[in-house]
Amino acid sequence: MIAALATAPHWFTYPNIDPVAFHLGIFSVRWYGLTYLIGALLVYLQLQSRRSRARTGMTVDQAQEFVVYAMIGVVVGGRLFFLLADVLTPASAGGHTVSYYLQNPLDIIAIWKGGMAFHGGLIGALIGIWLFLRRNKLPFYPVADETALWIPVAIALTRCANFINGELPGRLTDSAVGFAFPGYPGFRYPSQLFEGIGMLVIVLPLLWWLHGGVRRREGQVFWTFIAGYGLVRTVVEFYREPGIVWLGLTGAQYLTIAMFILGVVMYWRISRGPTRLQSKTAGGGRV
Image (cartoon, rainbow, N blue to C red; front, top):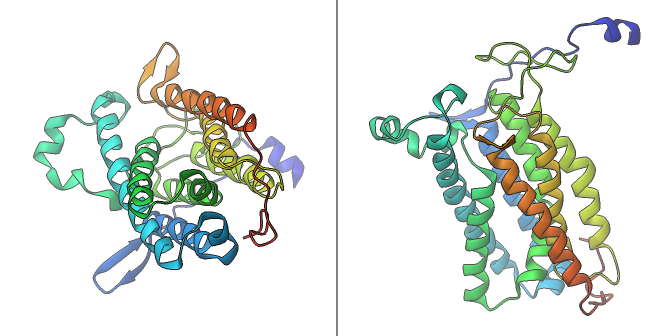
């Protein structure tokens, strides 16, 4: 079997999974939408746990409210940033013009088809979180640390949904791991899966390891997530089909490199501050 794989031109066949997970009457529930629901549920379950509430000062009701604020920010910010990137992307690379959206206004809000930008979603989520914390007079870093723990899983699930939708394919390749994505010429890297694997194998374990530290400082988990995502996405962009390219780097790489640098600098600054000892009530890094 190993010899057969070694000599095969391409090891895998695109699975052609139905983007619709199931139907509820006249409504179609897509895998893409489910990944956002699962991500929100994971964050809520973390925040409403007794030990997490001891670390953040939240109530269960506030945990529910927090998820609503954050998800509104994710959807609005993610979609707006996607639209901006889409109109700036050349048509040859799959972009659309402003006139296209003026002629097809429903496509502006058609998030059920995909089309969400991570960086816009992150900015939108942070704005929503800031509004929530300001309204409830809660500290940022304890809440951000708890929230970041499950975001790598949410991102990985979303990238799997991108793969199922056949969107965001990688660059052309002769590699054995290339897939023939529907609607795209040639074989391409499954860059969506590369990013998901990077989040699960690198970022997720690192966050939980830091979170379990008795002498960790507030904010270290959050900024590690920012730096970790920046690093993984910067590498993955070399395999992903580029949209906007300037001086050899994609538009996303400039953002993710900035994320990595900012995350490292802020982690270093926080590490020089006072240590927050985890109490037995807070339970260290346990849920």
